[in-house]
Amino acid sequence: MPQPQPRTTEILALLRREFGADLITDAEGLLARSRDESGLVRPPVAVLLARSEAQVARLMTLANKNGFPVIPRGAGTGLAGGCLAGKGGVVLDLAAMNRILAIDTQSLTATVQPGVITADLRDAAKAVGLFYPPDPASLATSTIGGNAATNAGGPACVKYGTTRDYVLGLTAVLPTGEVIRAGANTRKGVVGYDLTRLLVGSEGTLGVITELTLKLIPHPRAAACVAAVFADLNAAMRAIISVMTRGHLPSAMEFLDARCLKLVGDLLPFSVAGEQSALVLIESDGDPDQVRREVAGIEAICRELGATNILPPATTDEGREAVWAVRRSVSTRIHEDCAVYIPEDIAVPIGRIADMVAALPEVEERFGITIFVFGHAGDGNIHLNLTAQDEALRPKVEAAAVDCVRLALKLGGTISGEHGIGLVKRGLLPLEIGPVSLRVQRGIKALLDPQNVLNPGKIFPPEGAEDIP
Ligand SMILES: Cc1cc2nc3c(=O)[nH]c(=O)nc-3n(C[C@H](O)[C@H](O)[C@H](O)COP(=O)(O)OP(=O)(O)OC[C@H]3O[C@@H](n4cnc5c(N)ncnc54)[C@H](O)[C@@H]3O)c2cc1C
Image (tube, rainbow, N blue to C red; front, side):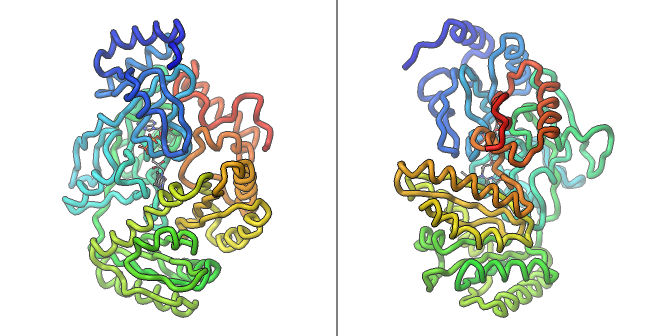
C-alpha cells in the first residue's frame, strides 16, 4: 500500500482529532467506499461516517480551510462514478443518517435524513396509506439523498415524474460549511430562485443534502401489470407509442429486447417463444374500476398491434413484484455476463423511440459489438447496454457508445435520462451543453464552491478539455 503524502498525514491527524471513531481509515473501510456501480475504483484517503448535520458542516469548513476534496456518498449504487474520490479525497458517507424523521399524514409530507433507503420510505408511506412514487430499479439499496442528488427516476416516472418532483424543500451544507434551507414545506412556493431544483440533480457538487421534505400522495387503491410479448422490438415500440398516444397514462411502461429476455428467462414466471421476441410491461394504477378499464384498453391495443402473447394481468402485490423483480435484475445480469459493459441511458422524445431502436443494429455491425436494450419506454429513456465478450474490444464499445449518444442528440434527445454525468460521461458534456451554458454552469459551481472542494472533477470536463469528442 502506498504511503500517504506528508500533507495527507497532517490532514488525517486533524480529522482524527475532530471526528474520533467516526473517521474510517482502515483498508477494509476505504475499500468498501472505493467503488460504485460504474466499474471505476478510486480509493479515498479517509471516510467520515457522518451522524449529524453538524459533523457535515464541520467537515466542509475544515475542507475549505485546508483545501482537501470531500465526496458525498449515499449507497454507492450510482452508475456514473459520482461518489468516487479523486486524489487525496475524503468520502463523506451519509448512510448512517438514515432516520425517517416524520410522516405528516395531514400535510402529506415526509421529512427524512439523506441516508434513508428508498424502499424503506416507500414502505413507511404505504403503511399509512400514502405513496412516494419515485422507484429507481435500485430502490432496495439506494438512498433518498443519492436519489435527490442524481434526480433519480424509474418506471413510475412516466406518470409520476422524477425525484425532483417530490422534493418540496431541503437542507444542505454548502461547500463553504454554511447551512442553507431551500424550498418550503408547502405544495407551492415561488419565493426567490428555486435553489431546491438547482441542488436536486447537482450530483453532490453544489451542496451536501442533510435533510429533505418530500411530497407524498394518496396510495393508489389498485394496480395491475400487463405483460405482452411481441415478435420483435419494432413491433413492441409501435404498441408502446400507440398506448401513449391513444389516451392512456400508464403508471409504468417498460420493455426488454430479445437478448435481455434470454438473460433473465429463467426468472420469468412464463416462457417466451420466438428468437427475436420482445417483452413490454405496462402497469396501470388508481381506482379499481379505472384500472380495469385501462387494462382492457391497453390489452386491446397490444392485440391490435400484433402481440403474440398477453399474460393475464398481475393484480396482487406479489404477482406484480414477481414481474418487476425480473425487470430490475436485467442490468445486473448483463454486467455479470459480459467482459466489457458500458451502460448508456440516453433519452429521446417519445415519438422518436422507434427510430432510435431501429438504428442500433447498424451500430452493432459497424463496431462488432452487442447492444442489450431495455428501459423506460414511456419516457423515451432507453438503456443501451453496449457490450463485448473480449476486453480487447473495449475501444470499439466506447466508440459505439459515443455514436449512440450522438444519435440520441440528433433525434432531439439527451445524453443521460437519469444516471447523471459524474466522472464517466463528463467528456461527453460538450456534445449537449453549449459553451455559454457551460460557462454559466461553471460560474454557479465557482460561486457556491470557491475553493472547489466539494466533489471536484465531476460533471464538467477538465478545463481545456472541452472540445467536442
Ligand atoms: C441495478 C441498478 C439499477 C438502477 N436503476 C436506476 C433507475 O431505475 N433509475 C435511476 O435514476 N438510477 C438507477 N440506478 C443508478 C443509482 O441507483 C441512482 O443514481 C441512485 O440515485 C444513487 O443513489 P445512491 O444512494 O447509491 O448514491 P451514490 O451512488 O452514493 O451517489 C450518487 C451521487 O449522488 C451524490 N450524493 C449522494 N448522497 C448525497 C447527499 N446526501 N448530498 C449530496 N450529494 C449526494 C454523490 O456524490 C454522487 O454524485 C441504478 C443502479 C443500479 C446498480
